[in-house]
Length: 288
Image 1 (spheres, rainbow, N blue to C red):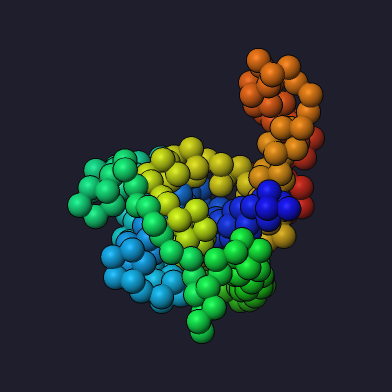
Image 2 (cartoon, helix red, strand yellow; image 1 turned 90 degrees about the vertical axis):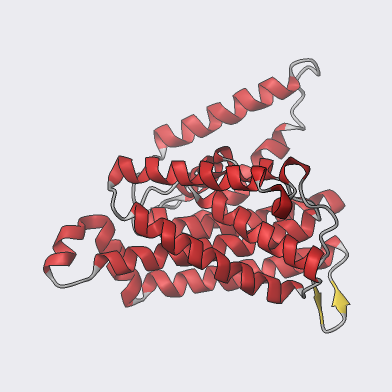
């Protein structure tokens, strides 16, 4: 039962990350590969506030979101100078920079040693110390963020974002300040990713830089592409599939000496087949 609860918590956390990145990549069409950096900023901000200041988890989440907003605004402004492949390469570089800061700013982040002893959330005297209650809390965050993303994408603001994806120049002709919309959604997506980071840090009770590498950003991009671009439901489904699939493959009877390698091969083949025969993702509206 604890194993299933653990998987459920991870699905909730990565579901939030998928939703946050879908707003940027799926809805707006900005190929960002830096989401793991904002995930990490939220995790580190929460971890530092909980371990050094003793702040309440929910206040720490809000401060983490504010810090992430300021940083992402600066990053987003720089990235706005680029387009298409150069935008992706720029975001690639920022992820490496943030990871390097996590690794080398030892007085703040403890570098490769990481931050241990991160506390669980508490609310009105109740501590979410048991994993089943942490799952409930994570699910509440996921549902709240899902409906927020649904409201956002179906609003007039969301329609402008989809317009940017389809033809940004046409929107400019009609007087829309597309830079404002792109910066706004980039910051919103980053803030939502920081919430997932806070949940992850509090759940695992330990973080180090290895969790927030470029590989993690690529994994998050795979969640959005597999689930379906511009689909909030697809982002959650993609997270569930990519979290569950490796776990399911653990129970396939591969020989023990090659089990790990065969799971990776099977995992990769399944993803390739899905992309060949369903390039718009499981429930997506667009192809990448």
